[in-house]
Length: 222
Image (cartoon, rainbow, N blue to C red; front, side):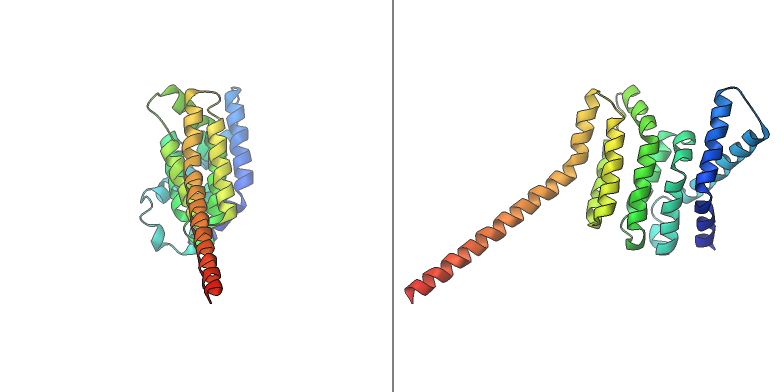
């Protein structure tokens, strides 16, 4: 039932987001209509579903069927525009954290990665505004954790999606003192993996060279 319900909501996501966006534009211009009430009801209903999903944190994720998790991940990405317009920054970071945990589920890895990208792109400006206006605010730790979770999947598509989303959030900071620090922090996990790989390759090459030299010496001695 849960999987079917999520599929139904995801199927109408584009139309629902367009309607809510239209209502938001009308309200901004001082116009109200019956559609406005309908759009507001849609937002309230969706945010209520979101609260229920996030209420248990990530602890309940292992209990859900992988296909249900895939549906949840797609739902969170499909309505990214609505979360960006109606949720506070902390709730958006909670969505990203939830999806980061779902990345470890093979059946939902690529969907979760794409949803992270959509949420980050839609909410980039909101997160950037909070970071710039509050000296102590920073979303770098959340982005770093998400990047590490993506790298742990070894799934190229998921890694690419998360990297793109994280980069878009960083770029939204514009040219502020925090921009370089944020980008450096996000790149950290990738750089660490590359260094470890180079060390492993170098060590492996050295071992093979040593083995070859030993065999040559043994052959010459014979």
